[in-house]
Length: 263
Ligand SMILES: C[S@@+](CC[C@H](N)C(=O)[O-])C[C@H]1O[C@@H](n2cnc3c(N)ncnc32)[C@H](O)[C@@H]1O
Image 1: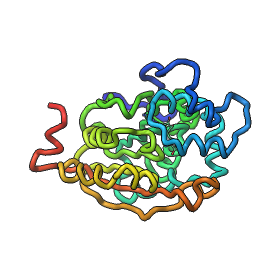
Image 2: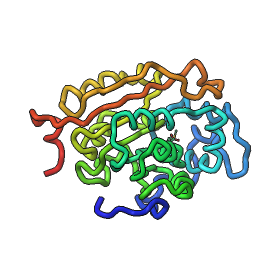
Image 3: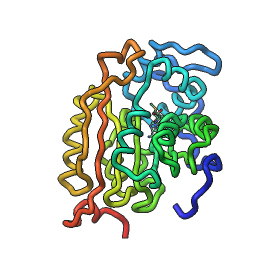
Image 4: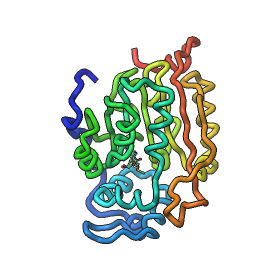
């Protein structure tokens, strides 16, 4: 990250869109919408609950959703961006550089600015979501990238902090992506992310998180109880909650986790 850009000057860069133009059956069946078509909560929820980790499908879905995402999430009383930003502000200095990994349309970047952060880079796989995020003028820089394609396009220790809000659902190999987060965040920097409580259990996420701690990549600072995620969405409401995590990247004096960083 050589050059710092002014907010609003961020340009969108990154790989070409994966996949072809036609959505797979799972997306069409669950109600991927064409432009102008009204949102159907049930169809959205159906797709979200399929927990897709196929990046091409996820990209298509979020590209199509981008124009309506903010309004629909507001209707579902989505609180995670504000809560994650508030948590990070409790640990990190506001003048640090933050990567908003899976920034989507920029709700999470907007919340970071409201919490006092100013130097924010956004990365997402959905180009149409990034276009919405760019119009918010809260990011120094925006780029298109796939969090499942590790190695991520950043040098070691590029960031003072990282947030990843509402994204882990779509990541198959959580361990690889989280290790990569530890590589690009400096020692003693902070990582705040969310995970749905149903997937935390189903994917044995606790073992993944503990594994990184045992390897010296990070140490846990905070884990919330399962909290309301989308209280205004009938399919989530009281049934599917979200857990917030705060980790500190380790110095790893024993050289385990840090040993994975590039020379
Ligand atoms: C629920 S939205 C969250 C967006 C934003 N963080 C927020 O809180 O509003 C999930 C975002 O993750 C992005 N995403 C999913 N899989 C991804 C991947 N493999 N690489 C990068 N972004 C991904 C989607 O494009 C989408 O914008």
